[in-house]
Length: 389
Image (cartoon, rainbow, N blue to C red; front, top):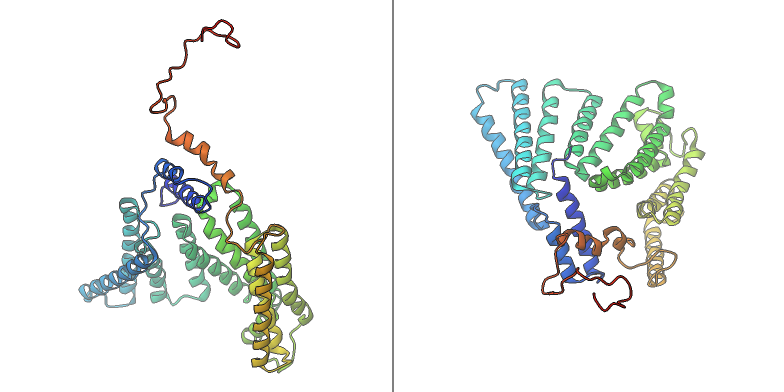
């Protein structure tokens, strides 16, 4: 299913874990070298600066190539359908080049492959917009299908995020057109789908076959937690309902069920923080901390208790003091939390480095170099009482 070699991806993961162990002085440089030799990685992955440059250069080449083709076929392209067909052809050409470069040049997150992937998706999706003038549901459905296939093939985290958002947008647009009752249950529908996606992502991540989609599943988990909260956030529900359903709410007027949405707005980030602390889950912890700001914004938007400048100043001071106190408190690890850079605590167990080196770097049955000791041939069966070994 993946365009990349699975064994090489496994080797890359082992190499990255070994680099972490080396930085933590868990293994020696010689041991790391042995692991690197035993698990070769032939991917081409340049540094970030070169990657950005290659991405921009590839995008320019694709754009100029499409422009040149348009000029060359200007006589044949006399309507929207002709240009749409050219976009489909260019998109398929980008996809073919992407597959070829990955197989022949071993590109992996090199900038060129990223640019070709997004060019292919953009050109193929845009071709439908040019001719049919499709509905929003059709656009979202096409984006969802193409990005879903691309995620399975290339395991790109950003593409996976777009896929999830397109899916959620498709469900939302279908739901709001099913009648007045559907409009009322739409927030709860989005909550339920977001929660189901988060649980599914966590369960899928536990399986071995999904190991190469770890970053995609993490991105989807974060987005599902955010959409789970935003679907019930009072500000989002009130303003979106007023804009889309023409409720014509007056200033200070609440929506039906306002008490529930206010409680939901305040409680959910606290629940995230509690579950994150209890289960040592960094995704829940960080999402909960981000959403604390959403609580403050929502309350401040509808209930002003002091001037904005004063509120921002006091809030900044409180956060600064709290951050300083927390850093001081966690200088020494407490209850499984620390201020130090996080590393996998079970790194040595997961790598089993010494066993891995023995199994992968030495040939079975080979004798250590420089050792003339000859084994075998002895007749002693016990403590050596016969004197013959």
